[in-house]
Image (cartoon, rainbow, N blue to C red; front, top):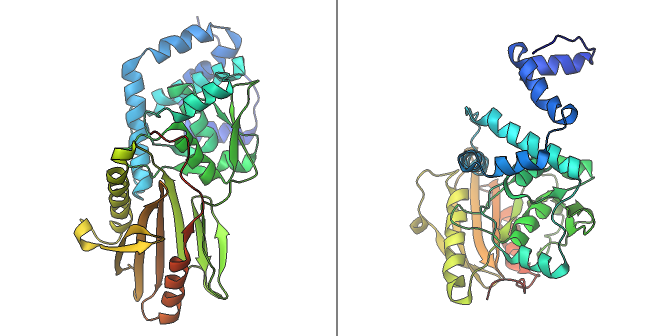
Length: 346
């Protein structure tokens, strides 16, 4: 039986509900949202039932994968899916369950080591840190948490190629890099807690005279005096395989990432259109092409060093030989400072 009640809420909340949910769907939305708090259902049973729904899990993963691909390739089309609201309900229910129980799996140091060395089912991630934390819990029962509003607002995107499944250490490291923070396991709550300070950069570069740099998390931007941009250095994740498979994996990752960047400037670009050059002793793929902005030249160097993928890109005036020379000098000074992760598969 349904009953009608009238409640007063803030005017901005009303406008937001009308705009986002729509008046015809308001009752159902509010009932779904409030019922778990007031009807006191068995959340553990509901979550177990939800986790056992393989079709819903498969659809959610496909939705997440599609969103990742759109972000990674820079497309701006709106995603319209009949499953979108259904997926939101999964996330909402899992978030309520996590809040109600206030904990994740509590791991001993040895269990942490084993977990971090195991493979995540996918390298995709999307949305803000806080929203993705809900999705991650719903799909994997892995709880990432931060009390820092800046970290929670960080928009995440993955560059892990579709064919690669990172270890959980590599996966969480990538989230920490984008969020400009570090993380640790809280044995009391079972959360993987993300907080400042930021991990050190995995490389060093000698700045050209007059140049400045700014750390944006996923990349560090470098600019000459009086210019907004000059060169960006992207950190695109860490990769691991058995010793016999490492070289092939690194080459495959390098090629995929080089295509990802270059395809923004030339459709159907191929590896044969790129040149192999050395950067810090690693075989990098170099590519250049005219940028959409007249008189601007796009250049990129993509490589894997110590198991970490890097992309150095620049968009400078085609006739500015001085800036191009300074960029070449900084790339020549590049040095990967962090050694290979000792926990990688052997």
